[in-house]
Image 1 (cartoon, one colour):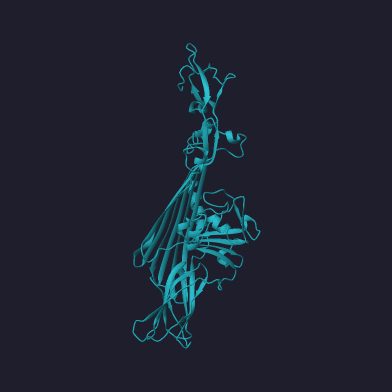
Image 2: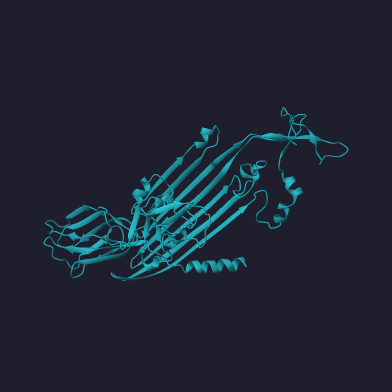
Length: 461
C-alpha cells in the first residue's frame, strides 16, 4: 500500500504546471541616424542565447535564465556595443535599444553600464521583487521576512496574507515548482502554506505578484510568491558565511543560541555546462530556554529527603531510597540541513535546466502546547521531550528546444515530496509494537522516569 501511495503521489505532482524561471530581452538596433539595422547579432555574453534583428531592427531573445548578464550587439562595419550588468527578471521582458556607430578601426567597441529601471514597464500587474544584491544586504536571512517586507504583505500567526486575503489564497513556487500545501501544515522552513523555501544565498530573485499574473501561475486568488534559484556564472566562485548569537549567555548558561553556516559554489563545468550549489546548516541549541529548580519527593520541612521503601527491592533485604529531582535546563533544540542546486546544459538549440532542493530538520520541543503539563511537561525525564523530523525534497527538469528566434517548445517534469514524524524518542517510532509499550507503566518505569538516590551515600540507584 505504501508503494502504491508513493507512485500516485509522484504522478500527481509530476503533472503540476511548471511556472517560469526565465525572462526575455527585446529592443531595436539602429545606426547613429536612427535607421534600423537588419541582421545585427545580439548575444548574451558567455551563453548561446541570442537573436538577430529583423528588417525593422527589432530583436528578441527568449527563455534567458534569471540573472545578471552582459549583452552585446554586433554589426559588420560598426562598433560593437555591450551593456553590462543587465538584470533579467523572472517572467518579465527587459528592453535594451542599441545605437551603433560606424567603426573607424575594426574591432572597436563601446561599453555601457546597465541600470535597473525604476518601473518594470513589461509587468501587467503589481510586481515587487528582490534580486541577489538586495537579498544579500537584507537584515534577515529568513525568506519569509523578505516576503513580508514587500508592500501589501502581512504576516499573522506564521501565515502570509496578500491584499487582505486568506492565507490559503496565496500561491508559492520555488524554481517554477508549486510549493503550496494543499492543507495547513506546520513545516520545516516557512509559513504554514509554503512547504519549502530556498537558502537565501541560493536565490537569484524573490518576487511577489498581486493579481494579473499569467494563467500558468494560477491556483491562487490573492497573489503569487516566486523564488528563483541562481544559475552558475562564467567563472568559478564561492562563499562561506557564518553567523551566531549567544543570547543564552545572558542567562548564565554555557549553551549557545543559534549557529548558522552556509557554503556556496558555482561556475562552469565545461563551456556549455554550468552549476550552482549551496549548503546551509542551522543549529539552535536552546531556543526558548526554560529553567526550574530541582527538588525532592518525601522531604521534611528543612528539605531533607525522607527515605522511602523501594518496592522493587528484595523483601528479605529491603532497600530505602530518596527520590531527588535535579535542577533542569531545557529548550527547543533544533537542527536543519538544506541543500539547493541547479545545472544548466546550454546545447543550443536544446537547453536543459535541472534544479533541486532538499531540507532535513529535527527538533525537540520543550512541552506540548496542548498539554496540561505546561512548562513542567517531561521535566522528570528530559530525554522524553518530543522529537520531530521533516524530510522535504523538490526536483525539476525543464528542456527547451528553440525552433527559431521567436518560437520554442519545452517539456518539464517536476516532483515534490514531504514527510513528517513526531514521536517520543524513548520508544522506537519505526516499530509499531512500541505503541503497546507506550501505555505499559512497568515498561515506562524500566526506561526511567526519575533519579533514585541512596540517602546513605548519595549514589544513584
